[in-house]
Every structure is written in C-alpha cells, then in structure tokens.
Image: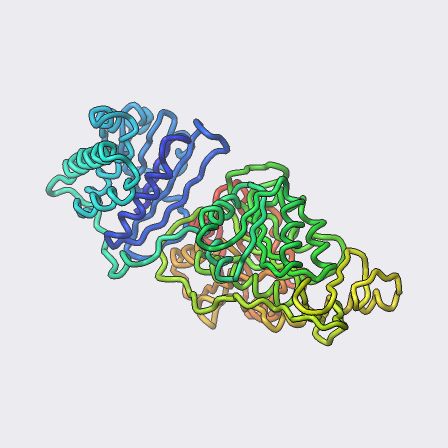
Length: 564
C-alpha cells in the first residue's frame, strides 16, 4: 500500500513519517518512506510517501493507494497520480471539489476538528497516526509503546495529550472498518520487527566510521548536510573531530591537511560546493594524498532545485581537477551499499593514495526502509602509514606507483610535499625526465585500482535478450520495474563502481539484442562514459531529470512495447 501525506513545511510531516515507519516495522510490515519538499522553511507543498508491504520495497512510486491532504491546495500537484482507485481520506475542506463530485472513493474524516478537541492543531498528526494504526490493524498497545518511546523527551502532560490524541484517531479508524467491506490486508513478515530502519544519511555516516574516519570538514549544503549533522551528533562518542569550515575551499584543504598529519578525513558536499573544491582535488592528486569526498547530488546548474534529486554530477566528478591523476568513483545503489562503499572508499584512498568519491543523491540519502543488517565484519582502522627512516623519500619511484607514506613526527625522516612537480624526496623540480617519471608513477596506480575493481551486479537470466544498465540509486526502481513487466528474457546490470569502469561490460552488452540504460539526468552521462570506453551504444535511453526520483512506472512505461 502506498500512502501519501500532502501538507506544508512546518506541519510535521517528517515526524509523522518517522513514527509511522517505526511503528509499522515493529508490527511486522516492510516499510519504505521518502519525502519530497520545497526549498523553504514554511509554506509551499511538501509530501511524504510511505509504502507498507508484505515484501521488501525501496522505490518511490507513482501509484497512490491512500492520499491524505493536510491543507488546501494539497492535491493540486497530484492530479496525474490520483486515480479512481486512490482512497482519499481527510477533511472535506482540504479535498478538491472534482473528487467530491466525481467517482472517487472519498472518506471524510474531520481531522482538524478532532485535533482541536484533543488540545490543538499540533495533535493532528498523532490523531492521523492512530487512524492509520487502526486501518492497518496495528496493535493498540504497541502504538502506545511507540508513542511513549518517540515522545519520551516531552513533559508528562504533553505525552498524555499525544496518547489521548492517538486513541481518538484509533477509534475513528475503527469506525471505518465496517463489517462486510474490503479491509487492508497485508501479511506480516517474521523478524522484520528486529531489523534496522535506516536512511542513506546514517548509512554513509556509519560507513565512514567503519572506514576509520577521524576528521570531517564541510560547509553545509543540501542534501549532504545530513551527513555533517550525523557526525556532529556522534562526535563525542566517536572521537571524530568535526569542523564546519567557512567555505568549501577551506573544507577540502583542511581534509588534505588531516591526511598529511595522519588523520583519515571525509568531506561531504553537493555539486555546487564541490565546484569550489576542484583545485583541492588536483592538489591531492599532485601530493598523492588520500582524500575521501562524499557528494550528494541534486539538480543543477547553479542552485538549480536544491531540495530535489538527480544523477548529473558523474562526468563532473570524473574530470574534476586540472591535470591527469587517478581516482576512484563509487556510487551505492542501496542503503547497505552506502555503508559498505563509504567504508571501502577510505580503504582505496588510503592504500592507493588517491582521491576516492562516493556519489549519492538526495533520493538515496533521504530514503528510509528496513534492512536485515549491515556487514560490520570489515573495519579499516589501520592506516597505510610507515615509520620513516633518515633517508626517507616521500615519492620513491615504485613498480606499483604507490610510495611509502610517512607523516611528520612518526620516524626520523623528513616528509616533504609540494603542489609543484617534485622529485622523489619532495623537492620542486623542472627536470623533464623526472616530470615524465612522476606522471607515469601516479598513473600506474590505476593498475592497482583495477585489480580491486568492484564488479557490476547482474540480476536476471543468463540467456537474456534485453539488458538494462543502471547505476547508483536507480537500482531499486529498475529492479521493481522488471518485476512489474514479468519478463523472463530481461536482465539488469547495476554498477556501484563507476570508475575505473569494469572491463567486462562490453561482454554483457554484446550478448544482448537490445541494450537499454536508465539514469536520472538529461544527457545519459553514464551511457556516454560506457560508449567512450567500449565503443558500444544503447538502443534506448530512459532519462529523468524533473527533480523527482526515477520511479518503477517510469521505466515500465518506457519499456512496455519496446522490448523484443
């Protein structure tokens, strides 16, 4: 069941989303939630979609089964998504006339009046929670327990008022469950109540901790700010030093300074902030400094749509920084990968002494759903640092291109580094032969990165006729779309490592009669990269760039009738 709440900023939709998903998961339902909101503190129209299911769900969908308007004009943006099968629940004043007069299933519930009777408009969301709990047969006692936990910081009088409001809503919901009428029937899944309910922000933050992160320097910029907030909240217990820099230029240079001194630094930013960091990225390339940068993508150019989602910074990140030097780019497709690949980025950056990028987006960061667990068996807390000798040479020419990395004060050697071209000891040089040797040395690291390449995930039959390529957060929408199609001849190839690119992609593509790519940008950036690397093109490109997440229905509609 897909439920959409539509209200305005400041109306408490995020609180309603958080408590609803927690309660339903505890009751044994699989849940997914995602909010899309305008770039303002109050007003406008914000919405939250909550999916409640008997199976795992992790996609934002066009389909709406229950629509709950919470203000006037809450339905205006949804005329193309509200169908004659959508049940509309709410105050008559908030339901547009076309739906009251037409053949739509409307259930009028005086939520505003009920909230007023309960003590004020602030209790409207709690009443709505009680109503939904009854409709979905959630145990009343469990609802009370969850409310007590969620509102544990409130004074007793406020807590009791919320409990009373939930009871009012619960009783109102029971009235809607009339004998003989069809009821909501979703099977419980055993063990779901013990699973983790997590969003991408926390997954990236925890992945950085598992990667041994000791320093975070950033300047706030949505949607990456959540990761910075995560570390400010965890700083005391994790011993991570967190610095909100005066700007993005300072942030990236602070991170490079941390790595130089033996720290393990993370920078979290978005496209516009990263634009200011590219000189620092090039500095890291020349210094052969590890660097981990998380980029939460959003629509550009310039400020663009600052609270929406897109996958349009891939080529920018790939080519960022002047000059030629190696890098690694990772793009998690789900919450588990957001944790694992952020951790892996610290390993790659530290071992190979290169910048490593984690590309997420607003959709992945702010999606929340239940997962069985996170794989915490690998924790990279041992830095690749050597104790220096007196004759230490920071940029020793090696077969692998990786020189022993020392830090000041750890050993008898002197650690010299520079943004100019340098010799093996770190002294500035204009010797042409040394310049050539240093460029080749740095580029040799690509061989090592290729040896540790994460292969793409292949899902589907081995004898496929059609193959759909996707990357990053498009993973779940594409998988769900293929399930909707019910095709046995269609496979999915998902990439979570974008660069270096897996060399066997040409083999996958050559076996398909029809090659499709799906991504959230206007120019098919990953498709262009694949064509550049392999010389192979796609028969169909499914591209979305309106600021909303890629939905299973987008892919279904594009593919229906197009496949062989």
